[in-house]
Amino acid sequence: MPNYEITPTAFCKLKLHATKYPSQAVNGLLIGTVKKDKVTIQEAFPLFHGNFCLPMLEIALLQLEEYCGEQKDLCLVGYYHANELLENNDVTAVAAAIADKIQSYYEHACLILIDNKAIIKNPGIKFYVKRGSSWIVPEDKILWTVQDNAHDLLNGALKQNLQHQIVDFSHHLDDITKDWFNPHLTKKFSK
Amino acid sequence: SAASDVYKRQLEIFMSDIDAWQELADLYISQQLYQYAGFCYEELILASPDNYHLYVQYAEILYTIGGSENYNMALRYYSYALEMSEDNNLRAFYGLCLVLHQLKGFASKDNIRLFDLAHQKLIDFYKSVGSDKLSIVDKVLKKLKPTETF
Image (cartoon, rainbow over all chains, first blue to last red; front, side):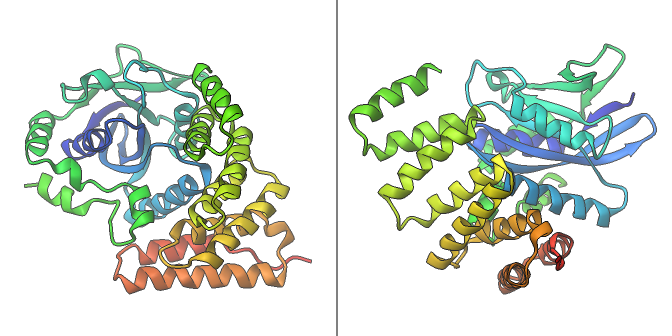
């Protein structure tokens, strides 16, 4: 069983996605590298806000699958989700179903649930892995961490209101010029 | 749930409350009650037959439920939507390709031609804006393409 590390870029993007749509559920996919006993979640690809149905999810998955195929060492490693209701901190059936699908790409895929009551706190997320047929909090020996300057990066991004610049797949479908890979944000974060 | 009961009572009295139908549909989708969401969309389409977005959303629900009958219906609704507006209608073009892929066991010459048309339109869209997603989209669509069956 590997340990998991979340890079500042991935962390910020998923948080910004949630803060951009505070009254709606949001979700997205996580891509990263897998090395022996460590998964590094490098990037977050925001997918939808509000309701969504199967077809566009399949298109997004197929495109990311193709992208990973081209990048050689990248792979789909997880799924993130923020529930619509403030008090709802459970893994919903839909979230579990999508995370199960990601498991077919990588057996130790993870599920990140954004803590609605602690979005801007550190880390403000709940981390789940699949054990048997359920997504549960992993055993103590499994380490999952957010890399060091992630929280500071998020604070800086929120101060600059960067959440307005994040693009998800749904937005891309409405406006083809918007890039759901968010390279403009990746560039800002790497500085 | 309690919320859907409230909406249902509202709609019993005001059958033409479009916003209520939409909210009820959203509630049903969030609870994975896609069949019921579909009924709501039928009402919405009756009320606003010119709104092609509704046709696309209804097609998405049909696809989500699945099964060849629903895929064929979805094919029709995606096609109606595209007849109304091709501009910027990425969801409909993508949806059309997916549905035709699902129906590949019944791939007629017409279906294949339709897929190729949709494929080309999507490529043209991505090309026209100089998108770097062009190659990924093209590869994905090539993999989805149905081949002729008898």
